[in-house]
Structure formats: structure tokens, C-alpha cells
Length: 523
Image 1 (cartoon, rainbow, N blue to C red):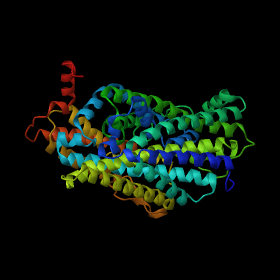
Image 2: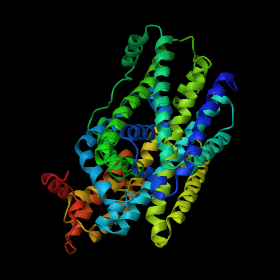
Image 3: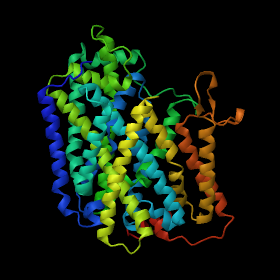
Image 4: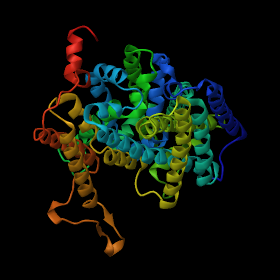
């Protein structure tokens, strides 16, 4: 690939999009006079904008690059996780949204404290923090890797420039700027995907029919293997993993729960959630299809060769810079940058919100609103710097697997039974603080055992498992680790609760209390 395949017009489009991004940060900076405004936009955002913001947050450079990479390399099996989200939402959203909007102030993990005590709140928030730091580093790294290959600029330089820009936007703009910027970037993301698909179809002899036929002949469109096997990556592994991913994402993830609080009413928050996932799932499908279409495109055009040894995650960036005309390249790259910014700015704001609400207020209960706001901005900077350093570490460590698979695996590991804890609190009235504590210990021990007995270290003949129990090693797929941790925490916490005195649980903290209020006409 040439050192840079970009034209002046491409750079101009990218620069203009970044200027607009910075302008949003500055424009809303004067409105951030309280933590409620800075973290929840004063609870005054219309439903459609919140929905677009949820969509833009769920879509990142991982979607923009890793989904086409997976579609090119494999089939559509990883889409199953996303398909489970609307299924879970259908059964839960009308209950989850009123629960959080009426029970918590800012942090999603305040619910866990009210239900089980402060240890539960800390456990939930730490799981969120670790999971999102690993995700943010991956998103920034993948973006920089792609931009570096297309522009010739050093990967580390891009990481620091984009990282600092995101910190600036989040630091000064707060959640209101994040949401309205997400709206614009959301439309840009959709436009970028449409343009990419249109170009591939127009450049492929035979169009859509030829692409689909070639892909089907090479087993690229499908969700298998379908055998009931948890050791390998199968349809059932992704289905079960996806169900618990959706429960945790929409029931205990600060980036989504905080969006509930920005809406004007419960009804608006519910509409926003449905709109957000209603847009997101088709976009996930579109970007997976881009990878499949690229496989067909290069397979059907033997005269257009890919660079030798190119990785699947790099195929889409290569296509952009070699097959698109000037102007469209800049548009696609602006959409790619927008995908990363819209995901990372929300993560930074939410991490700071958790830091202030779960820890700073606990350490300094008499702190003023101004002090809490100042600490929130400090935490934005700290979290941003940490994400930049993690992405920089990935540069030196190198890639060992597909980025999408890595992100899914890390999320499964760091989930640490949080969905299990949520389900225990909502559906088991007998569950109590001490029982949950036993469940948390069991969950941590299980996760440690599974990781140590399935992770190899060393090289060549010296490569061995960190901990080897022979036939008792953890051998199931890594995506199932998070699922099992939810089960361990839920069932151990449930059973252990019977060994401790029963406690009265406030009705507004359980699903049964919600049903009672619904019958009485409150909801």
C-alpha cells in the first residue's frame, strides 16, 4: 500500500468533521454547572436523540473494522450476540427503565448497594471499569491501526492525537454534548456504511446476486456450526453468551443506564432504548455483510490482488484506499473516526460518573456540587490517559487474534457475574447481602480457576498452562466463561442466602414489586 492514498479533499473532509466535533465540546461547556447537567444532561433530552446516542455508543471502530474483518474471514456467527439484544429487551425494558429512573441517582450500581450493600456496588462498578478500559483500548488501537495503514502516519501518533481530542470533547462538553454529537455521528456512520456497500455492489460484476452466490458457495453466510457444543465456537455458545450480554448491557452497564436518566420520562427512555437497538442491529448486519461482500469481490476479481499476508481486519481499510475515489475516502474515514469518538466519549463520561458517584462521594460525603463536578472532569482526563496508554500497549504487544473476538472475550471475563447478581436481586426475594458475598467469592474463584487452567504461557516446547489440573482443566470456549460466572454467582448466592437470616426487601427493588405497582396502575 502506498504511504498515503488520501487526496487533499479527503484530508479537508476529515479536518472539517473534527472541527465540528470540537465545536460541540466548546458550545456546551458553559452549561455544565452541576454534576446532573454534566453526567445526565439535566434529564431533558428527547427520546429520538437518546436513541441515536445509544446506537452511536454501541457502534464503534470495532463495528466499523472488526465486523467486516470477521465477515471476510469467517461467517456471521458473531452476529448472534447482537440478535439476542432485542429479544431480551422485549421482555425487560418496560421494567428495567422505571426501576433505574426511580431507584438510582446517577450510578447504575447504586441499585446493587440498595439491594445488597456497598460491597455489591463496588463489585459491579469495578467489573464495569475493567471491562470498559479493555474495550476503550481496543477501540482506539483498532482505529489507529486502520488510519495508520491508510495515511502512513505512525500508529502511536494517531492514538495520542485522537485520544487527546476525545478527552477534550468529553471534558468540556459533558453528556449533552456527547449525545448531540452522537446524533450527528450516528447519521455519518449510517451514511458511511451505505456508501461502502454501494461501491462494492457497483464494482462487482453481477452485483448483489454474484456476491451472495459466491459467498454461499464458500459457506460465508450462516451462523453455524449448529451442534450443541460449548468447547468450540458454535451457534449455541453465541446465543447463550448473547442473552447474558444483553441482560448485563441493558440492565447493569453504566453507558446505557445513564442514557435512561437523560430522557425526559420513563416512556421516552423506553422509546429511546427500542429505537437505539432498532437501528444498531441492521447496522451490525450491514458491516458484517461488507466483509462478506469483500470476500466475494476479491474472489471474483482475480486481477485485483490483496497484499500478501494482509490480516482480515485490514481488508476493508485496504479496499477504502484503493477502490474509492477522493472525497468518498474522506467521508468513510470521517465515519470511522466518528464511530470511535461516539463510543469513547460516552465511555469516558460514564467512567467519570461511576468514579464520582460510587467512590468520591463515599470518601468525601460533605463535598459540594462544584467539587464533585471538578472531580468528574479530573476523572475524565485520568480515564482518557489510561485508555491511551492501554491502546499504546497493544501497539507494542502486537495482535494475537481478531480484535472482535478479543473484545468479546475480555467482556465475558470482566463481566464477573454481574448479570447474575442483577437477576438474583430482581427475582429472588430470599437473597441477602451475606449470601451474595458468598456468591461473589465463588464467582471470583471460578473465574480464576477457568483462566489459569485454560491460559498457556511460554513459547515452543516450553509452552504450558499456568495451572494444570489435567482432566479437570477448564476446556469450554472462553465466551462461556462469563456465562458460567453469572450462573455461579446466582445459584451460590441464592443457596447461601438460606444459611443467613431473612431480610425484608423494599418492594421497589424487585420484579415482584414492579408487578404489584403495575396491577395497581402506577406503571
